[in-house]
Length: 236
Ligand SMILES: Nc1nc2c(c(=O)[nH]1)N[C@H]1C(S)=C(S)[C@@H](COP(=O)(O)O)O[C@H]1N2
Ligand SMILES: [Mo]
Image (cartoon, rainbow, N blue to C red; front, side, top):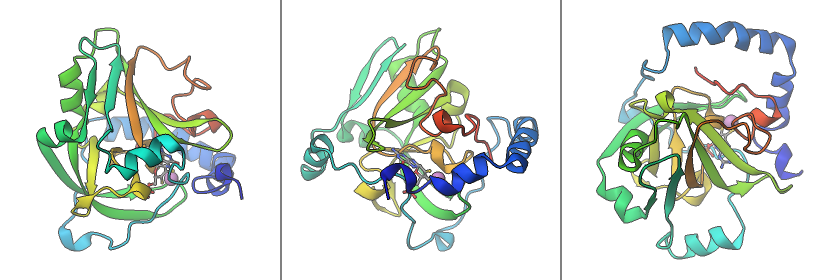
């Protein structure tokens, strides 16, 4: 089985191509915007609700030498680059990220394939990182560039508009269930957006690029799966 057919692959494509499901998404979209918007909070759970094993899904943990070298050093050489339409581009190592205020959330991850898992996530609010780099007036989206790919030359990426990115629960997660994020769950830094479907929660983030438009990135739909036909707005 090729990488492109694993994880959020064939099942979800079947859903995306399913007319009734499409109609449901289209019908639910304005409703979600109205009821939840970008300010509503995802439910937070208690310690006892946390699933002991959090399923691993999506593309394989990057096997390229860049990622493997970083992992071998405990990500000592890792820098989260934050650039593009910003006043002060940033390069945050893990010490810098851990030195910022840490938020913990116990929230449920909902994959479009139909499974969910509750995890305890800790890390830095994306809003705090944005404040540090000061987005310019022309910045509208944060694009998350990841270190994995589908084996056919297409890297995983995702995007949020800056309202979604400043949502109080939008987290750059460094830890899962009281331990440093493991490689399979997106080490060293992944996104957690509990108000949106799982494919928005990009793993293995190398760079956050602030842009006015994502039309010129990859196939122009704002994310790897969006380029295959998924909805860009994945609110739940
Ligand atoms: N970089 C990257 N991020 C990704 C994916 C991926 O394939 N690559 N898959 C997405 C999907 S569809 C899901 S459901 C979750 C799975 O996260 P988990 O492995 O921690 O369960 O990661 C999301 N983020
Ligand atoms: Mo998913």
